[in-house]
Length: 377
Image 1 (cartoon, rainbow, N blue to C red):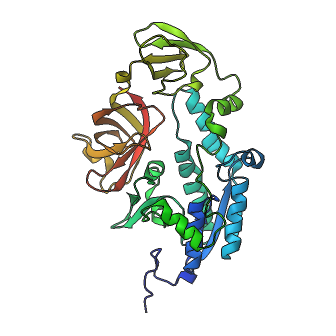
Image 2 (image 1 turned 90 degrees about the horizontal axis):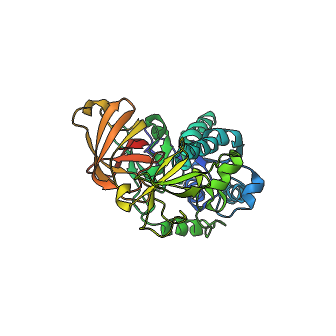
Image 3 (image 1 turned 30 degrees about the horizontal axis):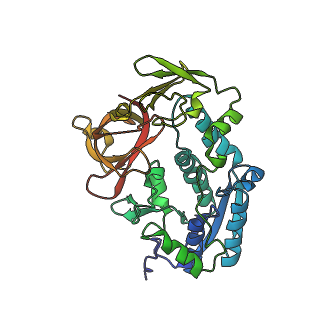
């Protein structure tokens, strides 16, 4: 007799279904692990130590180090399942931190959380889960996985918590193996209520803030430590060519920045471009920030048809160019198997090289992939 399909999609008893839970030490992943353990699954908790314990202990709201490893271990003890800590410091530095520093030096605005999911959590950790003979790996991300002809990625039910922007690099074979038990919740309050119901010590723990390895949000300080002497001075130049002042390194500036330019006495000016070769910070009026067209590469495609089949008329999509903005109507014109030109229906401000452009279906919550912004028109 065939066993009914359980909540993770397997036709066997929960007790015979092994699931590795990626535990950061926060409320979300702790609730996932506790919930699955309570339902009778064979849960194995795994936490990655991504950077130095000592540095992490001095920073509140970090993840994957210091206090958070302790918190994850305590949840496992409370709920009675095994927990392992894996030292991924070297992998994390090579795959995420070094690239973050180099991207900033090149005048880009990187998103290291996406690279961490792509190159560490959903690659190396997922392989570890398979080595542990797990049927699947579960995370605390707010995103939904639907079973259709193949597994599909969809926005979280609570769009204010949706993390799809940070997960667009998920490959189809990874999506087949992953589970996201919190994606259907309609508010963060539900997660905290579950944590309280399970009696977890982390029930009132605040969310992590900023980038985990950047204390106090000071990107420039981290880059200067990683790349000594990288903050070369240069000119602040108006887009009409006039030199307005000097800066102490382009790593201190981002596209769209207005405050802290040190060039008062004029109309409001914004950083519209960073030129690392010329060591210039280029500024202009706010309207110069609006971009209508830009190129992307390293595309990860999760659609049903071949990406290049729409090379002529392009794909009608909705896209996000910043995690905090709602998707906007656009057309994607493939220029190769992994590259495209994106044309926005309404120009967006702050489109910056190094940021992600994530694709959404025009008439549903489905995520169809995305790419990395290379340059703007």
